[in-house]
Structure formats: C-alpha cells, structure tokens
Length: 168
Image (cartoon, helix red, strand yellow):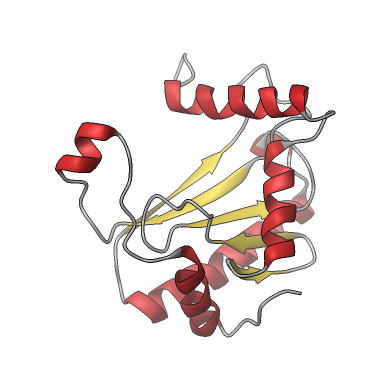
C-alpha cells in the first residue's frame, strides 16, 4: 500500500513514545523480556526466538512470535532469525492444530513501515490469530475485544500440545 494503516501507525507511534520516555528502550523488546521473566504466558522458545500469548490477547489462543535479534523490519532480519522464527512458527501451528483441530487462523508479520526500517524502537514480530469467535455488538461498537480464554491458560494448553516446557 502507499500508506501506513492507522492501527499500524499507532503501534509504531506508541513504541516511539516509549523509547523517548524510557531512556532509549524498545517497547517490544521490553515486552519480550517481561514475558520471558514472568513465564506464565510463554508457549515455546529457542535460542533465537520466543512464542507467547500476550497479556492482553485480543482473541482466544492469539500467539506472538518474536526474534531475539533486534531489527525493526522483517526485510532486514538475518537468515538465522528468519529460520528460528519459521521453525518456531511451524511448531506452534502444529501444536495449535493438535489442541484446537483444523481451525481457521491468520498470521500477520508486523514490521516497520517503509522509510523507518532502521529505527531502534520497534521489533518486527508475527501474530497468529485463530478465528474461534466472531466479533459481535460489544466488540464492533466499542473497538474493544472480549477474550474468553485467559492468556495463562491458553499458554499452558499450547505448551502441552507442543510438548514444550515453560522457559525459566
């Protein structure tokens, strides 16, 4: 597209504000670190990437995958990071299928907009969004999500389906 969608622009702007307000720290790197430290929402991890259910997941069993290598743009990711995220993506999708069956899902690569690929305040990542529910009146009217599965419970079930252990 010739423009950055408003929602994506907002994510990028919030990340920039965090960087400016928090002594040059990347919001997404901080989020990954916090999820690893907490551990309850981790799904799987390797040496180069991690998968977790975000604290405020919009949908049941929503999963984020992030590389440990800090790059704002998917296009600038190293081959090692791409391989690690790809391998993790395959494991997580296989576990999701074992757990939920052959449900529809989307996955989205979230990356820095063109012209802003070198920013230190953003981390490209992948969101997996199973389509288990249909937004209804509240969600459509308010723009807010209702998630019927607590993220800690979703992560625990996904770990069991993948055969991974919590990362400590």
